Image (cartoon, rainbow, N blue to C red; front, side, top):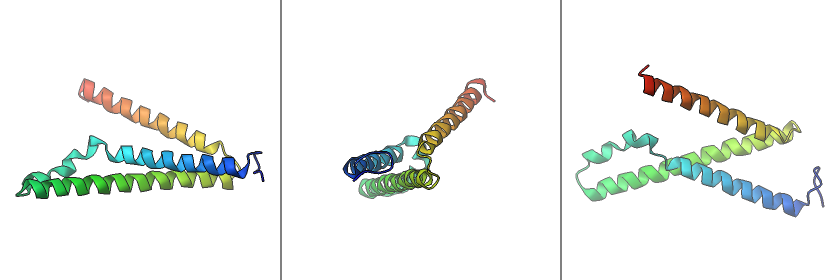
Length: 117
């Protein structure tokens, strides 16, 4: 059995599993980022190392899980939009567009930091 693009359903299922795994790993890696260190400040006020370690571990797991779910939702949503509009290239276009916006915003932040604006 083949889909509209001429791929077998087995090939399509394998590609889909790889995409879902890649989406999950992407979310997991974003969950490990250090940009939320200020939210770990309450761990400094805890009375024991054990309670602070449990807090940090719970924070990490919650952040990694929520970022994974958010990334998967955006990825799945964009795939479904592409199918609904019969434009599979829309996922690539959305990815490139969001990457461009991220680069521009990062450049603006860097320029402001360098020149003290």
